[in-house]
Image (cartoon, rainbow, N blue to C red; front, top):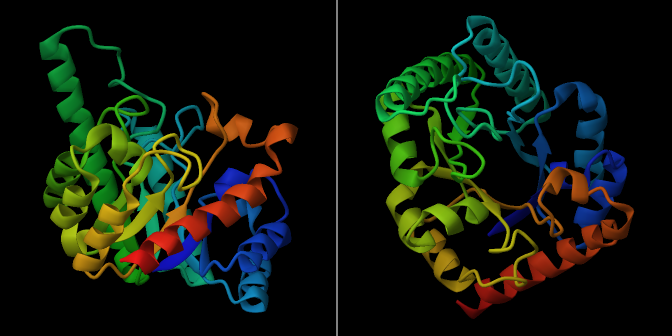
Length: 288
């Protein structure tokens, strides 16, 4: 397996510190949060070459509350802005040599359709409308990505953080509706642990559609600190001949992972989790 870390968990830490940490603990790559304006491509490419750490993927940072990031929003201007943002992430990925951009179809943090529906009929109609908006938005983004040799990977997010695509079966239906050859899957063990009956069965079901994977334990900390069955998961990944990276996203305990990961008392955990996580996964892999 190839191992990487997504740099969103390190907040605004200087890139050189992040690259040095991942190199120190034997990682094979880095995933970038989708904020292209923060990361000059010349600096990224220089650090990738210096530390021999390629960019494995770019994570579309589609967070509710950030304007222009919601691909399912009924507002035409919001969706157009979200598509433009997606194109910026695709361009950034192409410039730094990342083959995959991860996409979330409705903004993370928004847990119901716009309008706060309170009846079954209202919910169902608004849900379907936003599903259709997201399908069309991602269809456009996939066409743009295809022209640049980039694969999009749809990520299901658990029900407490979104509502549109929360588990694998919904994701597979969404891929079918978009019908783009370069739209695949990214699965995340933290969200899977909530939504999937079996992580390993979900991996087997995803098969060759799975091109990217986020890894944290059941408590969202480093692998080995929770109750996740990594032996079964890695065995399933080997069975489907998974070729993507395992991208670690461990964060300290807290209700707001973006905030608590930047608390001064938690900064030492950046090294601790990076070291513990890869060691644990490699031990499990070697035992297989």
